[in-house]
Length: 349
Image 1 (spheres, helix red, strand yellow):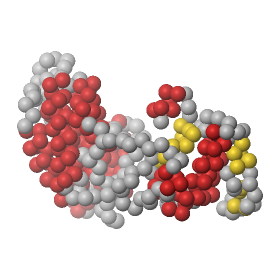
Image 2: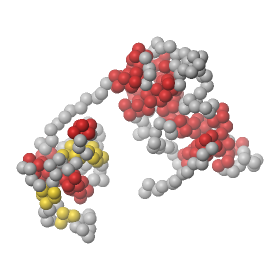
Image 3: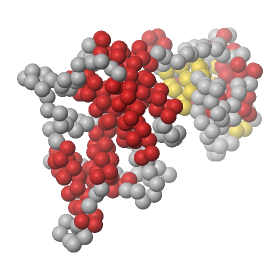
């Protein structure tokens, strides 16, 4: 994608999965040939072995036609206009733009991946990738967000060590990710807190609390807290929070967003929204439907994480309060911001 941007080429990335079949792949290749764009098939070896062998013939035909500078390519398939899922045996010449190119990416060591057939390996030049230096990336990111170089070096090493320890020590969950994708939101939130006058180590700790804790299951929450304290305790940095406007010590009681709403007011608003949701404010069952502190913590975490991500997945067993959680947070935001909120329920099926 970066190479295509530098060369002025339009790049389209297709995420391959088991649902791809010969018909759908043929349509994609026909579209690439007509438009002259670069097509990148991500996780290409997730396709079935028989699919890979069939697709290799189509890719080979495109490459041969490009080598001969032909204006059309015969992919050996045609889609029936009356039944889009049926292929007839006639050959169709597809217009071929000279800028067409096909790339594939794959992780050969992953479970459930198919080995590439030999005839397909010969069609591509292999480019091996290595794991990036997470410490260097984190250090530069912290430095770019206002952390002094000596602090950025120490804190980046502590963060990467923490994520490596979490990957080894915590339980294995399908939604856990301890790579660069999970590290980026922590760095962004730490930079936001640093610009508000929070000390370097405190900014990292609060960023971890705001971005990592929401996705932890109960059995890993305490373990993560202990790991975070041990990793950050060895970092020798000046941790005095200073107000950048007055030069005085900044207030220490701030929620994860570091905004105008203090923790007590936020909890009270969430509690009131919880009761109004069930319309029990003036009934004798008010105390019975009071939200627990753990549930309120999750509501605060959801409000905080909404500022970092455009898409959020609330994970939990049936009946644990997932729907109630986002409804209460939405009502609380309406109260705090005096702005009506809208919710649309879409059936993904």
